[in-house]
Amino acid sequence: MKRLRRTDILVIGGGIAGISAAIAAKTTDPKKEVTLVGEEPFPYRRPSIFSLIEGESLEDLAIFGPNCLAEYGIKSLFGAKIKALDLEDRLARFEDGKKISFEKAVIATGGEPFVPPVEGSSMNGVFSLRSYSDALRIREMAHAGARCFIVGAGLIGVKLASILHKREVKVTLVELKKVLWTLLEEPLSEFVRDLLISNGISVVEGQGIESIMGQEHVSSVKLSGKRYNADFVVFVTGVRPRVEVIADQLKFGVRGAIETDQMMRTSVEGVYACGDCSETIDLISGMKTYRPIGSIAYRAGIIAGGNLGGEERSYGGFLRLQGDEFLGTSVTSVGLTGAEARALGISFKALILKQAQSLKIGICSGLFEPDAKFLGILDGKERLIGFQAVGHKLSRKAIHSISSLISSKSKLEELRSIGLEPT
Ligand SMILES: Cc1cc2nc3c(=O)[nH]c(=O)nc-3n(C[C@H](O)[C@H](O)[C@H](O)COP(=O)(O)OP(=O)(O)OC[C@H]3O[C@@H](n4cnc5c(N)ncnc54)[C@H](O)[C@@H]3O)c2cc1C
Image 1 (cartoon, rainbow, N blue to C red):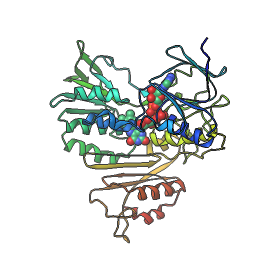
Image 2 (cartoon, rainbow, N blue to C red; image 1 turned 180 degrees about the vertical axis):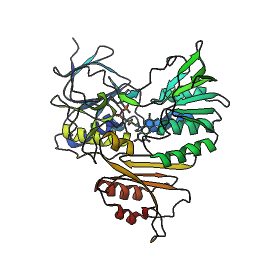
Image 3 (cartoon, protein in one colour; image 1 turned 45 degrees about the vertical axis):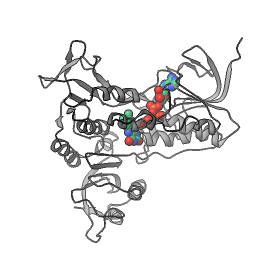
Image 4 (tube, rainbow, N blue to C red; image 1 turned 30 degrees about the vertical axis):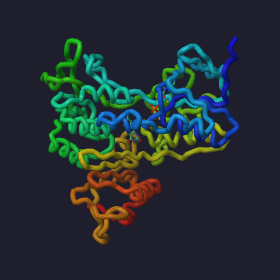
């Protein structure tokens, strides 16, 4: 009979969280055998799937060359899915029936798109955008003159709209609330909405798609009781933790994500979780949150992996930092937004900021863009807990300075050190 395969540390998931956890575990204790299993055929940076829609090739996507994990001494199995996991017996079974036993594990199974229950959403021509294969399917539909409805105007929806628009697709962006409401307060959100509209992208706020119609393939959508012709629809309406392989073996916390502590430990000894499948602690409020963001997945992986390698690593909380560029404009959002503060029960006010009188330079260095908009979120004690910028590309140094001001809950006056003050 074939010998049962064994590893010291099993990492389930080959995304950024799993990879950073595996490398951290192996570099912390090189003697430990670390095995990473990833369902997708190769490791890649998820944000770079936009470049596929822009027309670039698959090879440009890889995070690491094929041998990179091997160079660390990590065994990796890509294109392999763990079908069943027994955390008590420390045994994982692959889809093809093979098994691997392990001493400790990291669950880094990521997230999956959340699609609201809209009639017709399972029809051909309806997509989500999570994986490289989703991007390739969308690219196939994205020919000049095609009519696309994008549902959800978060950062991914807005960026996709700008890319499809560049490919001469007729884009309508539909959002239940406001454009980029999870990142920006209203005046900045309006700035982005107007930018999209002035570039020829239709934006519908305060409404959702009511139904999707067609025979075998999408041919129209219903919006506010009216029917509009459509060739394809993309839902970018959020992410939820992907935890089917865990079933009921672990405790779950915020929004159904795996419950974790400051060391990324789960409720089962020797089992850690990180990335989009798990909750994390917010630095500012100290509360548990669900933030499916790559920068947090990466840092959580380093904490989990270091602990598995035998070091004591813990964190006090992660600061949210999101940003991107589209239609020649940059958007940055750091710390708590008004919506998040409200949800966490933190009193706050939002203040529009302008260039400080005493300074001729912009944030840390360089001049402000003339149309740039800046906004600070202050808590009840007038301390900075969030920052948003639109229309001005922030340097790494500027982002670092702003993050430090927020992390140390600085007073409003200290914003002058980065060239800003309230209007
Ligand atoms: C289009 C797009 C753009 C983005 N842009 C940004 C950005 O600019 N900045 C940013 O910070 N974040 C961004 N994100 C979010 C970021 O990509 C995610 O937060 C990050 O990928 C999460 O990493 P992860 O390793 O937790 O999960 P994933 O990247 O989802 O990786 C998990 C992996 O585990 C595999 N898996 C699941 N179950 C099993 C199983 N049973 N057996 C084997 N393998 C399994 C999955 O197939 C997947 O490959 C973006 C996301 C998307 C979709």
